[in-house]
Image (cartoon, rainbow, N blue to C red; front, side, top):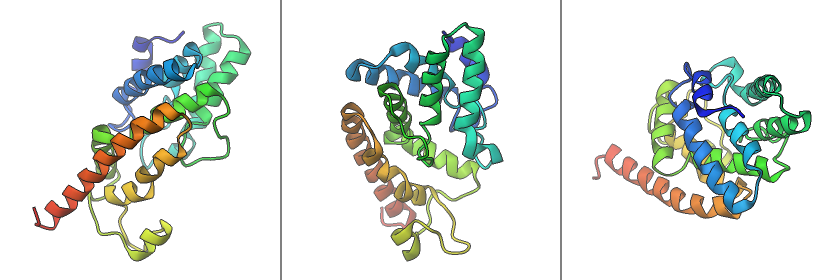
Length: 211
């Protein structure tokens, strides 16, 4: 079984959004969801530690395929540890199925559903605020910009329109809860989403000098 200390080295050069702290938060939340949902803890632990191990830098060409690259890396790690091929495949499925923007391989097992939900909970609440602002900064985008009518209707920016952290909130974060698979995660997400909504309401008021 990969250890936390072993995994720490895999994320030494990761960005501030997908760093080892993110991995530890997902690991801990996945434990909580596993206990509630009856998943295989060893599969979940391995998948959580390895899910972002390759290609997570924002803007990098490999970012869109990081879940596939991480799944291949996971297989190499687990083979060296003597894991059974079926259990390696189970971990790989969890990792390939965790990316929000890729629906080609939806989570089929309870372990994959747990990892997906634990990872998505990390974009909500107070941590979600920090991560979405950090991601915008890393990508050279503003914290806030008024979304166009086109973006509000379709999720597509007008030419030259920035993708601010508020854009990401409307485009993705507000929709995360409805994509979750476990009742436990949806209950946690509901409270965290309220916090996130209130944060952006306050941010806009301060941005516009109303507070």
